[in-house]
Image (tube, rainbow, N blue to C red; front, side, top):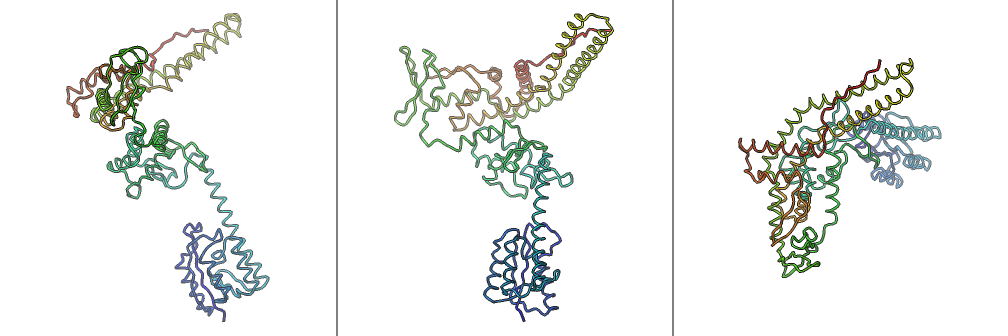
Length: 519
């Protein structure tokens, strides 16, 4: 009697849901062995795909057959043994050599004859064809999803898989926190670890409830999915999902990554503020030098004799902190101001809609007038010269209306967005002023002011708008918790800031034109 090896396999990514589990295969095969009086000497169980050669347990079984330990294999179906030409060919070759005398399958008949080997070869070929065809079908389906702007697979942190509509939607618990992660890291004041720790404190976890690691944080911050794109075969595609952040914010985070990828060695940059300031007395640049372990800043005195003394870096940094604090808003002020902006957005929505509709009506009116003008020309009511002159005037008027409409739809309430960005930036000044990163302090000082001067060891500069508005009011260093009177004062400040954003964008007023009528 031939001795048999029982072989059961099911890959973890098995596409055919109808294939029996390993436990069920073993049960069925043992019952089959009892009915057929087969002698099973060993059982081999493998959880690995057979699409490619190299299964260790399968290869070990064949090597034992070559040594004569057994001469038969019992399996549920030929596709359990092989789904590739190499493994299938090896089994047939061992049958040719007589090392495999019998192959038994409850669902397939085989005997070691030319006809039996031919049928077995067909069975292996069908198994390979099934896998190859399935792969092509899957790839075709993925390509179609890409054309629809849909990313396949598990939704990233901050999104959920909508199984009903087959798309990815924002996760109500994590979407806001993921956006906050980008905003925090884009400030440049936090490392990856610090960013991760801050968001974990705010409650951000993975979808399975685990704490995010540094590598998870980095993957999120470098994933273009969050600004509306996604990668497929290393190419970017436009997605239809709701973006969590803007492209500008994503690019800012990538700049921070690039800067942190090549950190300067400790102690190599001891002149952070060199080239930042000018001497108020002679106009020369302020240089720096290190003496006795301290960095000092002084005038270069290249143009003429100058009486200005040096200033230590610690003192200069302290003055920069004081300057930044003049335009830094506490968290409570930021939240109050943003809520006021949202109220303004709702209040201006109706007037903006009326303005847009008015421009569309004007464009439509010009088009109707052009039609009547053409009819008048065809009826010889007006001369060709009159027609050409009036037509050109109307066309220029239509272009003017169209450009105003396009400009307003493009900018719209951008002044509100600029005001929002300004408020957030001014709130970041709180952490920048209290932090230790001198490079960030220098960059923020450049952002809020111009023409920084040093006179008698004292720093001065001209605040840029709208930072100057904030500095002049003196409300930035106000109490952390706004009271009613402070809110009234702050509302006035908000109106000033909004007015500045209006003027900088040159937001259009409502125009009413009289269109000549031609009958």
